Image 1: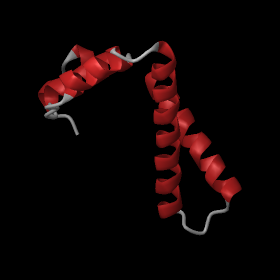
Image 2 (image 1 turned 45 degrees about the horizontal axis):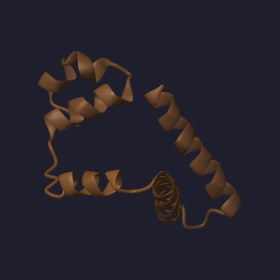
Image 3 (image 1 turned 90 degrees about the vertical axis):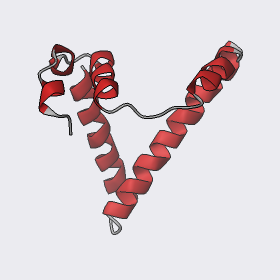
Length: 97
């Protein structure tokens, strides 16, 4: 949860994802000691490799979402889990648009 001073920051009230991200980083900076090296590695990738990395990250995100839903709703069918995952993704889209 963001503290009151950060919530008053205009960037936090803006619905643009980049502004919200910047406000969160200012409020609670997470140490990222290898970030510079990570960015350099990404810059060294070919466009095809970057696209494949994006697909891998998308697959990882989906797998994590499904694992969390299976843990929260252990008796749910695959169809129900699919409905829940679509609902969660739609909620995220509404928050960032």
